[in-house]
Length: 249
Image (cartoon, rainbow, N blue to C red; front, side, top):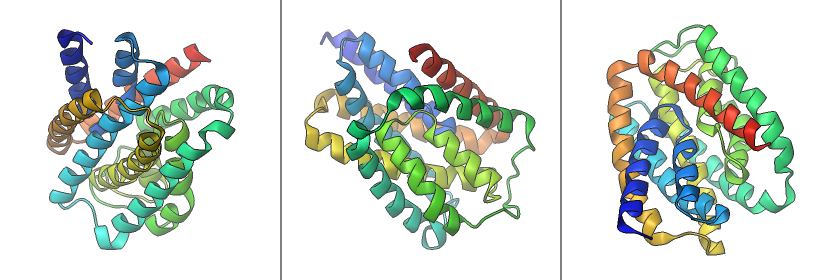
């Protein structure tokens, strides 16, 4: 690979990490870039998991340091469930119909976009929810983590919508737990991809460092600006992911 292409991919990972830490969907930037650079599709998806894991785990650490993740109450259980779910999803990839998902997931993404655009503005403080985070962790989170393991687009947005709309969490606590769930599911699926030998480790690790730094900057922007940045970016990424999936269907 030419040095300038390598450098461009690293910069792309930085941008993907920034976006992913706020609204999810960083793979919409990084996976096409890898494929344009000539990386085969399976290796592109597997290598992208390295930078995606770094970005989401970086954001998780940043939110945790700011006190937005209650580890003993919610975070540890969600991390374990999502880690196992992501690994299970990666193992199930051979047996699931991805053509159906490419047709159905855009509908859910548009629904999430409409919810964030027309629904009530996310509050900074927690509100009364329809279910507890513990119940969400035991029922919804495993499904989202498995989905992330075998397909993935929009997982962060789905976590955000569920934690805000179902559990009543405030914007920043929901973002923090989203990074716990999404980071763990990315890590679980990454372990399976690593065993398959599909990852380009040199490129993946370089992109991971850039994604880590991009995510740190993204978290700072989200904390400083709040809903004024998060809501439109989530809507944009959901719509962009839906259009991408519809074009590929």
